[in-house]
Length: 290
Image (cartoon, rainbow, N blue to C red; front, side, top):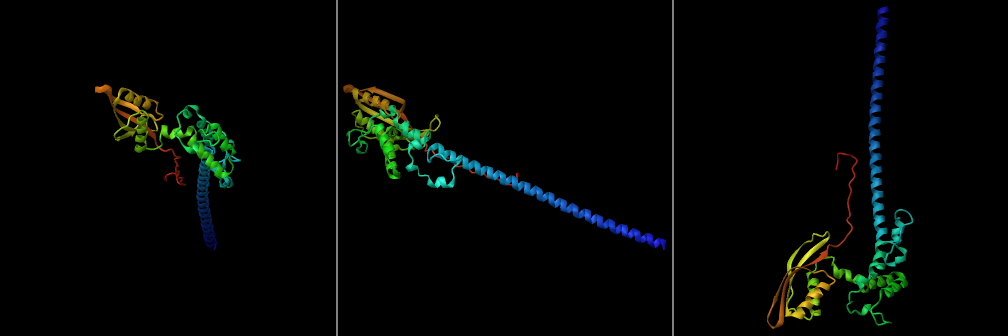
C-alpha cells in the first residue's frame, strides 16, 4: 500500500513538472514573439522617421529654391504651404515684394548696369519711348514695371526690361547654347560695320570644352583681304565686340595696292543651359538593401 502511494506521488510530481515545462516553453515562445515584434516595430518606426525627415528636407530645399529665386513671395513659415503655392503667380509679383532674390537682383541691378547698357542698342520700335522718341532708359523701364498691375501688364513690362535694358546684352555676350548661325551673323555684322563685305562665312566645324568651368568653345576661321584701314577696322571691332572672339593664331600679309590680308583662327564661347538638378533618394527599411 505504501509503495502504491509513493508511485502515485511520483506520477503527480512528474505531471506537474510537465505542466511547468510546458508553461515555461509557452512563456519563452511568447517572449520571443514579443521581442521579435518589438524589434520589427522599432525598425518600422525608425524607417518612417527617416522617411519623414527626408521628405521634410526635400520640402525645405524646394521652398528655399522658390524663395531665393523670387518665383513666389516669401512663405509665412519656414516652408511654403500648399495654399501658398496655389496662390503663387510669378507674373503678378513686383520686385518690391521679393527683395534680395535672384529675380529682383536681375531686374534691379543687372538690368541697370551702366557698363552693359553702354553697348549700342539695335534699332527697335518696341524700345522707343513714344513720348521722348528715344530709347527707354532704365529709370523709365523700371517705372513702367512698378506702375504695372495685373499679370498681363507685369508680364509685358518684364519682357520690355529684358528686351530694352542692359539684360539684352547678356545672351549676345555669352549665349546659353551652341548656335553657329548666330555666331556667323555676329561676325558678319562686325565685318559690315568695318566696311568689309565678306564673300562667304563658315564655321571651322570644331568645338570643345573650355578650361574655364561652365564654358564651351566654338572655333571659327576669319579671312579678310582689304585695304589696311579696313582690315584694321575689322580687328578693332572684333576687339570691342561684346561677344568674346579669342584669336589664337593669325597671319597678316602685305599685298600690292596697299592691301592687308588677315587669316586667323578664333574661338568663341557659349554656356550650357542652367537648370535645377533633381535628385532621387531611396530609403529602405533593411540596412543591407540598396
